[in-house]
Image 1: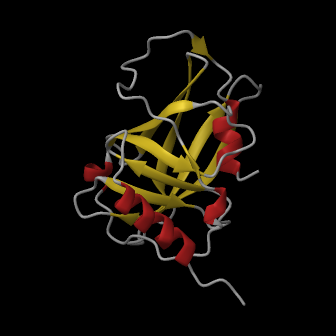
Image 2: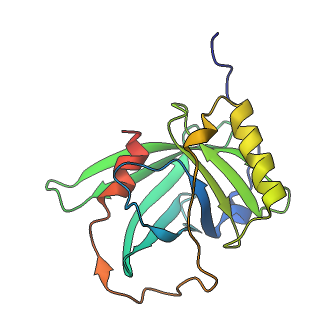
Length: 185
């Protein structure tokens, strides 16, 4: 049976979508630190309408981060199908790596969201708070399942009671796994 077309949010208000989101669960990438925790994303709207993306995770007390740019794949479309582009250091020449970022669901208050990709190999559940109510979590998981995702691969991301602020902690520049996970490898 052919998989049906994924339902994607229409009319996403980018301005409201900006700010910090905590990763509640995701399909683990084999490149991602197994013990990554307090993983979060911060989105900032730029003057040109593109979005600055900052992804952070902590592993063994070290902060790993990567920055990129998100933009609508088709500016004339109502659908929340974004492309995310990262520039990959430490490889030279610096190569842009582009991945898909489809907003499959967001609540009307913009407090939690379900993010996927056309390949269905990656899935993220994001929340404005480091905790998400179990009932809401289960609804999002069911929604992903209805869209053809293998939800058995979902892995909950540990979030501490007091998420780390700012950029303290030793830097870990091996942020390569962010790209690899976006490439859907």
